[in-house]
Amino acid sequence: MLENYYRELVCFLNAKLGNRQVAEDVVHDAYVRVLARASTTPIEQPRAFLYRTALNLVIDGHRRNALRQDEPLEVLDSEERYCTTSPHNSHDHGQRLDMLERALAELPVLCRDSFLLRKLEGLSHVQIAERLNISRALVEKHIVNAMKHCRVRMREWDAH
Image (cartoon, rainbow, N blue to C red; front, side):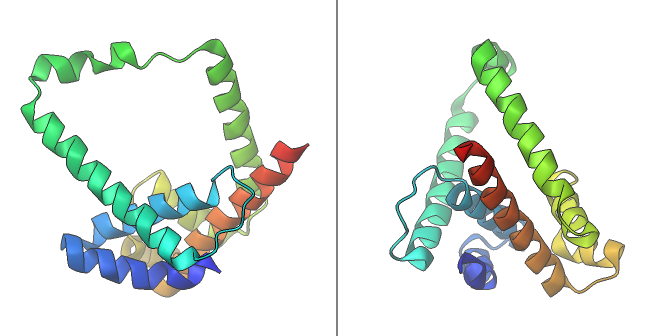
């Protein structure tokens, strides 16, 4: 159901941000957030929820950028000292990565490759389409399907 809004939301954000690549990144992040949400309560208005999530990500990004412009370089360089994770969080993160790898392994090759080229290599939809010799629309469909599949599988595995 949510995948029906993908192009519409990219066009909306592209008009607001003036950068299609950034718009696609925000939409992907919004989909990941919505699809990975822990709540089992159904979303009453999925389109509005997805748009609000995407706009919140844009606002958060602007706030982060505004804060970073005011911070001295030494603060930015030393930030990683404050990003320590506990052994429990690290173990849980490792388990989630393992589940994600298993879910991705279940996908058809073009679907998995489209997702990985986008998320790991940061290629645009056009670049992925050229590399895999498929249409841009099919790339978009593969990425959304991969996110949806991973969400469903990870929820199933979390339940057990």
